Length: 194
Image (tube, rainbow, N blue to C red; front, side, top):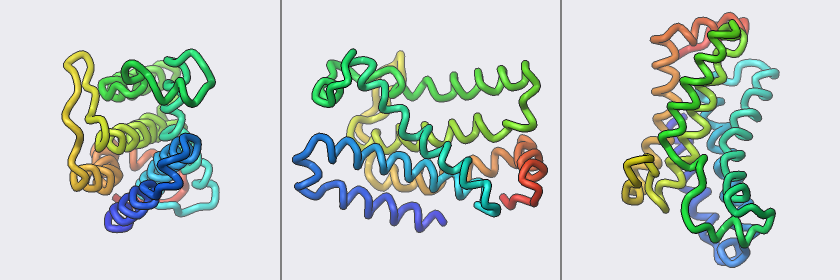
């Protein structure tokens, strides 16, 4: 599956470079956001193994989480204008990579506090995969914004593909070590392989 993920990234990014997409702001924004969503869905499908029909809902949610980050462009612009959203003075808040562990750990704490840890045990991991894949893909153009320390230089393309392809497997392994895989296996009614 890692090879397929890398191949998808390569093909999607090559299609994204077609002049008719690059010359149209709407096509460029929609294509970019769709690729974020598809990578988020694909990554989560690798984690859960897509064993049952109802797993599709989780996969759609992962894609939504990977795509919804870009709403912050419009929030920072204070407008629904795509032109305003694309011409911001600085990167919007949800594009701060430091936010990912803060939100994931806060979500895990809230779930523990309200005793939702069994039925929704996958949600922090899904959020982590979806948002990290979005940030890493944006990182090939803009680098990663590690606030308050600044930003990195743009990520080399090979590193983006490597991280995107290995992230679901790494996440799955850590979920195994923390016992989340076992809880998910019970939730899904099947054994989920690492």
